[in-house]
Image (cartoon, rainbow, N blue to C red; front, side):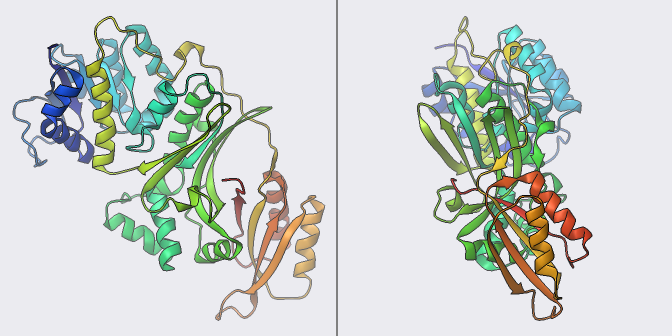
Length: 437
C-alpha cells in the first residue's frame, strides 16, 4: 500500500471541523477506496481552546496557516479560512509554490485570484481542487472539468445560493415578508449576521464566474457580471408571479452569444411547471446546456457543513488516488495561460420579456402616460393589469405590466421616464421572465 496522504487543514469552523470528522469516521472506507490512508497531520486556526467536537491532539498545531502550508510534513493543504485576501490567499499561494496540492472551498478567492493560482499549480505540477466552492455537495466542477469532453457549452445557469432560495421559498409558501424570512434564516444559521454578500447576489456572482470560465474557456471576470439581489422582492411580486404562472428564483446565468459572453445574476420569474422552479429551500441546482449532451441538471444540498465537507473530502480522495508521475489536468479545463480574455456580450433583446410592477397615484392620465413611455421605447406589452394597492392606500393603484421581447436598456429607460413623470408612490420593480427554464 502507498504511503499515507498527509492533510493539513487551515480553518476549523463548521466546515473544517466537519472535514476532520469525516476523515476520522470514514478512515477505513477511504483507505479502501483510495488505496492509501488519509490522515490529518496538521491544523491551523485562531483559537486552540475552542471545543470543536473532535480530538485533534494527534495533529501538529499552527497559529500561522502560511507556516503550515510550507512544511514538508503535509501533502495536501486544505484552505477553509475564507476571504479573497490575507491569510487565505497567502497560504494557498505558499502551499502551491512549495509543491503541495491544494483543496479549497473559497469561491471569493478563486473569483479574484483563481487564474493566477492556477498558473502556479500547473507550473508546479500539483492539483488545485475546488469542488466545494460552487454549489456545495453537487459535483458540478468535476462534471464540467472531467466528464464533458467534446461538448460545447452554450449556457449554464442555476440556483447557486441556498440562503436566497430558502427566503424566496418561505415567502411563497407561507406568505411571509422578506424581512421575516431573513430573520428566520439567520436564526437557523442559513444566513450570516450581515447577509449582504448572499442576498445582494455577490455569492452567486462569484460562483457563476467560476462556472463561466469552465464553460467557455475564458479568464474569470467576476467584476463583469450584471448583479441584482432579492432584498427588494415583496409579497406583491410573489403573488403576481403566482397569478401569472411563475415562481421567483435568484438565478445566475452565463451564456455564449454572437458578440461575447453574457453573465448575469438577478431575480427571475420561471414557469411553475419547470424543473428549476421545483428546487426549494437551501437546495442548489445547476443546468448545463451543450451541443452533444443537451441539457443536464444537477441538484442537491448547496450549503452547510456536511454538504461542503463531502465535496472537500471528495477532492482530497481524488488526490489520494493519484500517483507520482500522473499528469494532472488543467485547473479550469484549459491550461491557465490558454484561457481567453473575457469578452462581454453586447446588450440584446431578452426573449422572455419582463415583469414590471408600478405603484402609482390613482388619478386620471396615469395609464396613458405609462403606455406612452412604453411605446416611446418600442416596448410591446403582452398584458397590463391594474389592482388596488391595498386597503390602506385608497389613493394608489398597482399596475402590473408584462412585456414581449425587449432589451434591458429599453425597459430601464421607460421606467426611469415614468418615475420622472412623478406618477410613482413607491420604487418600481423589474424582473426578467425566463420562459424556457
